[in-house]
Length: 114
Image 1: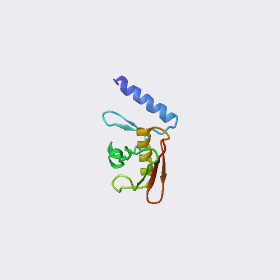
Image 2: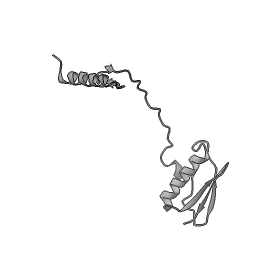
Image 3: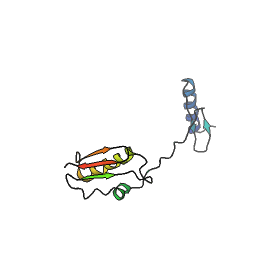
Image 4: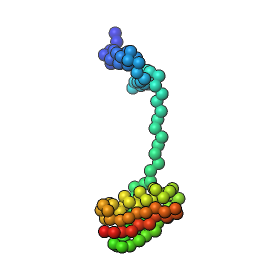
């Protein structure tokens, strides 16, 4: 006699098959049902927490100060990553609308306005 879990699984598979759905079911004991290809997502590399604080010394900026930052190959691969990190750090430290962050070809300029 089949147990209730096996009966429920068979019903679900039959229903999905009858609806012509693509599916993949993997049971806890490793049995696989269906033809849908399952791909594991790629691992996203992230910078360690606190890198922005250590790499971007902007805590002592006063209103009217201008600073120039160049990307560091270790942490920031392009101007957009550097600009985003600067903007987030400035927002956390000084609040919304506190600075103008402008990316250029080889550097990013920051002007603190409030």
